[in-house]
Length: 336
Image (tube, rainbow, N blue to C red; front, side):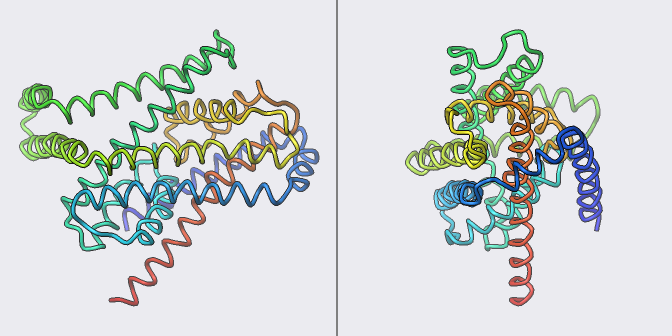
């Protein structure tokens, strides 16, 4: 009941912020923007939706491989179902924090012990973060070389800060996972700090978490082939997701764009979105799109493409997730 209340509250926040976004987006060129959307080539819209689903299938490949690496079996079809559901919980929680716990829950439903389910999701997260850092680093380097966005831009600086923070979190996780000495140092420091607050349960939880990180890294290294396939699948998943603006703009007859530049711009938007505490980054991601794509396109097409991009990549992904979730639970109830 408590989780349902949180989801309802977050959905209300999304609705309120979305209403404001739509108001400010449409208030000046309403008819022109609506005409652009109505006149969009439906084939390109369908292709962008297919690419969204392919992105989730690549994520499912990663989950599937990680599950097998941990000596458990989930059918590939079930892995796809779970990975279609996850965007719903990512979308209704701040900082996309609800996806991983629900993935653990659904893996546990597949007769995988809770501890193993948690380890699989943690391993997958480490590999996903690695893929995210690789794409983000390429985007930053590309922008430094070709100077797509102004060097003195405050937003650009925020993106760089976001990248550095993400990189440091990834590096810290990697060091804790791979180095026993570093793991033990962090554990001693943490336990020393917690000693002041006398929280035995929290101490035990952190000790177990750091120990699990190291075990998970050992599994990733031991199963190199599965880990590399998972990494490659996550990279392809992100490329598919980041290419959706290009497909949307092509459908609106904008044919002079470079797909690499649109992927770089979208990567910057998603890095900046990590600062936005509202579920789905609503408000912040729309502003980021308007800012970065303004250097590639202009006029009412900018706003029109932003609205279609957000609908496909976020709202439609949530709707698909909610439908698959309803079907999944209906099947569960029938089995009971």
